[in-house]
Length: 241
Ligand code: GLP
Image 1 (cartoon, protein in one colour):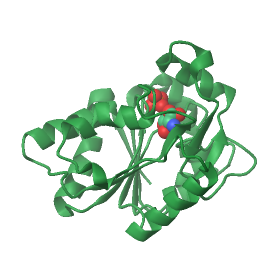
Image 2: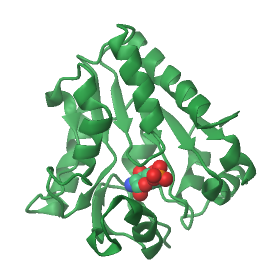
Image 3: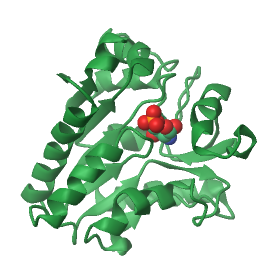
């Protein structure tokens, strides 16, 4: 596990964008696993700038997003498909046919999870997976629990996550209580994983990750089992202040 501590959020974003840009240059048909949340927004901004400058081409890039609220409609400005369009896809030359996000209004949500995994398997999983981390250590929407689920599945959000994400909604009552999330299986199948950790409120998750102890009660610690992980943390997350 490689750990890079940057002086601030902007440097974290630039360092991460560089890894993704190099990946796209080396393989224009690269399969990227993408994440939402406030943490990757700066990195997406850097990638948009690189695309506009002609440095990277998204036309053949294939993406799989980690998760989506359930139930939610795609036109809801808090849906993750809306987020991805707003923060990345609408500003780069990606082919939307190559974009995959779990369907937050699928009539059969269990089948949706199975189909999502089957599709990822058909593509040969992802080359680089981007991950943020919840302040409780969750990855995608795999919440701390006695057991974690391997496949893409519907899940209940914890009160802590509902509370953390309420800042994006008009009121906490508007935050969906469930989501469909990639399980830890497809995440761990990525060839490379890039984890972004920003802000003092993520310090506890950062410390647990670096402790080397692995526990389902802090899903980010599973990164210790993967052979190619780059952690990029800003100083606030690394030092907790
Ligand atoms: C959500 C997402 C996660 C993300 C987390 C952290 O719960 N499902 O993928 O890592 O938020 O978000 P933020 O970056 O806003 O702290």
